[in-house]
Length: 395
Ligand SMILES: CC(C)=CCC/C(C)=C/CC/C(C)=C/CC/C(C)=C/COP(=O)(O)OP(=O)(O)O
Image 1 (tube, rainbow, N blue to C red):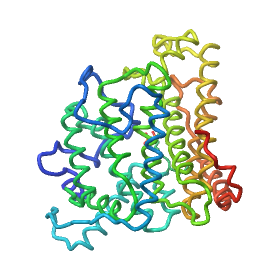
Image 2: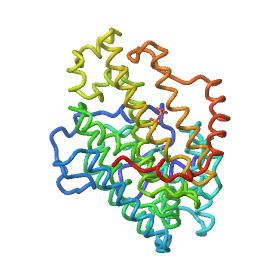
Image 3: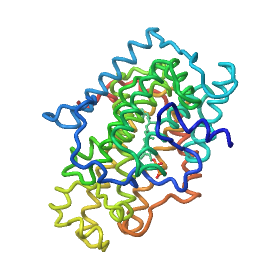
């Protein structure tokens, strides 16, 4: 494993980015903030920059674009992979890629055990590609959440974005990049969700409150919805699916949003102690609650009723996501169902804790986790719906 540190310590002129040997994993809300309050990043144009429309409308445009691109790329346009630039180590290209993917697998196995198990249910090719994407997301997250987070500036994120472009052009800086370069050369994965995830990190550096759900939705898209959009091209759509590509991408986006909302509801107390409140401020105020109540952490009827509404909304996103899972290729359905069923149970657990998400961490016990696997398997047997109307999106 010692070589890994070397590989991860990144490309030329980069701040060291470590994904190994990091104590604790934590969510993406453990980041420090206040480093760059008030700084705007005019040099970037994320896909969802127009403030005159709702976040949902703007994000849906990204979904449409992704769906159009995947159709285009499925017609046969392939990106070149130029692994010509020297990468540390004495490897042939074949060796390099197989070692690179193995390393990505090791990182997943170490940091995301359940996720790693889920990937074991996929075909080998897809599993490797999903590992490569996971590792890139994890490294991105660690820029603002990892051991070097206090030194991270918007400039470092700009450099990370430049490096992302290089990876997509087929010029990786290190092994993990090489795996991603290979993945994006094989699957119709677009750069946009990756760029948007970096935008989410910029947002996290400068923002610790969300005025309303529209703002929160955008944040959830950046940090989690993007993962859904990155994953579908690798997971694949069932050849017999009659659903529109955009409806499937929309379901994938919904799963990312649902997961992130669940994550936020689970970690309310923990986040508040770090100075962060992700719950929509206007909804808190309407419920007669404030940041102060969250810090005090007393479960009151007001809180219970507020939480019921938040949980209901997260469940709506899970329901939206459900509509798309059956349309995925058969080998990808089981892991996706498993992760959906498992993560959704965190909401049940918050209820079982009588909505005390201030001091009690909601979790899904081992037995429930285990039982979810056959349940997920059963659902995964159901393939694409023959009835088109079932998948028509609401937008
Ligand atoms: C539904 C369809 C059509 C496709 C599936 C598309 C996928 C895979 C969507 C899932 C997107 C996803 C996994 C988003 C990440 C969301 C999230 C909140 C992850 C939590 O990360 P950690 O912070 O490490 O979690 P824990 O703190 O719970 O360990």
